[in-house]
Length: 240
Image 1 (tube, rainbow, N blue to C red):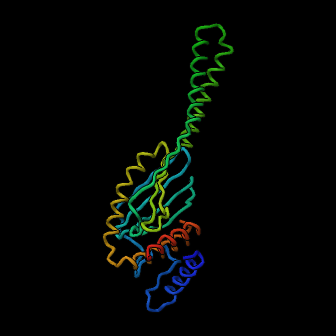
Image 2: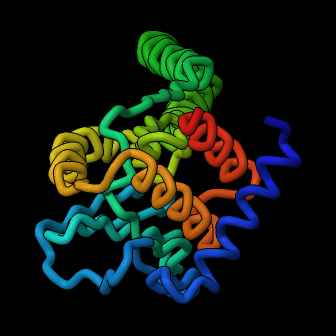
Image 3: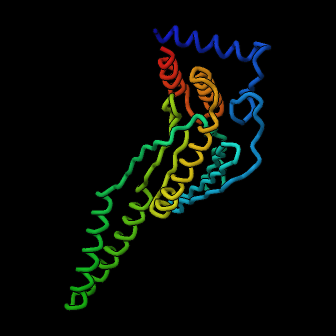
C-alpha cells in the first residue's frame, strides 16, 4: 500500500466518522479520550509529581479510575503542556534513555584536584600568594562543573501507544528526581493494564479507535504530523 493511498484512506475514514449520523460523534476539539460517549474523567485514583530543580521543570500526573492519565508540565512558573491520555491505547513497555555527560564530570574532578593540590601547597609553602587564588579557582571551577553535570544529566522513561508505537508520555528525571520517576512507572503500568482489560470490542474496532486517538493527540500537539503518519501506517498494516 502506497503512502498516498494510506493518507487517502485515513482522510476518508476520519471524514466519515465526523459526518456519518450513524456513528456517535467524537470531537477533536475537546480534550478527552476518543471513546463513544466518553466524558471528562472525574474520579482521581492517584496523583504523582516530580520536580527537576536544576532546570526549573515540574510535572504532575493524575491517574483517573476511568482509565485516563492527565499530564501537566511546567517550565519555571509557566505551564507548557496539559493533555489527557486514554490508557486503553497505551503499551506497558517502556524505553529508557540516559544522558551522563562524563566529560563534564571529569572536568569537575580536574578542578577539584587543582583546588586540593593548590591548597596543600599553599599550606606547606610560603607561596600562598599564588596558590591560594589557584585553590579558590579550582574549588569554584569544580562547583560550576558539578552543577553543569547535574543540569545536563537526565534519564527519560518513555511510554508509547500500543499498536502505533508513538511516544506519548515521557518522564524526564534529573539527579534530584531519578528515583521519583522510576517509582511512578509500575503504578502507570498497572493502570494501563487495568484500562486495557476493559477492551471488549474486536481487534479491528480497537485499531480504528487507536488510530483516532493518534489524530486527537496530534490535534493537541502531543505528537507531531510525522509521528502520527508513521503510527497510522503501522496500525493500517495490522489490517493485512
